[in-house]
Image 1 (spheres, helix red, strand yellow):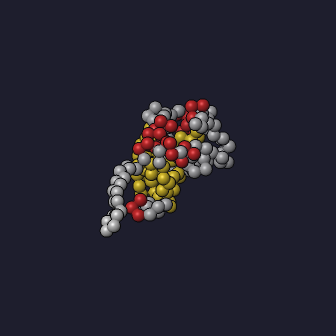
Image 2: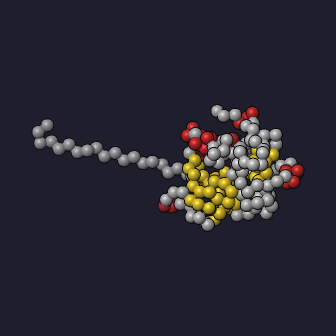
Image 3: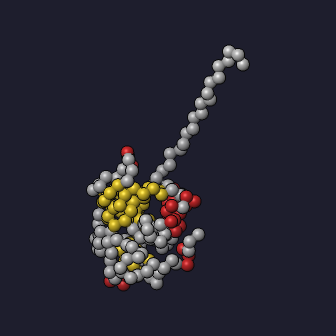
Length: 175
């Protein structure tokens, strides 16, 4: 059309803000561990690694049951300061983790204070080394009394020199 001016169409796309929650993992969900793949499965939701951290208070991290599962016992002030990883997760991943961890029957999701060891990311989401943050952790409020008599660990590795090989429980087989 002679003399017509064609202007580009402007489209506004508004992406809803996604609420993200900090979660501290210390066992089989860490990088390099048997259940880490679950943190990366997009069908489970989004999990973004943010930092390595250590609990501010000591907790007993034990390996127990016939499956050699790592349990963080909710008994602050005993055990060792526990190392793990902080992830920023969306609501879908938080719901997946609740189900995976059997919350609230098997584990309880409680808050724990953490000292950041190193951070990943930029801007407002950066966690600075040495800073103290609060995150959710899956821990045990009820447990066998003899678990407190077993060795405690500051860091869990399914392939560690403790000789307690992790066995995937029947109800947690890979999907």
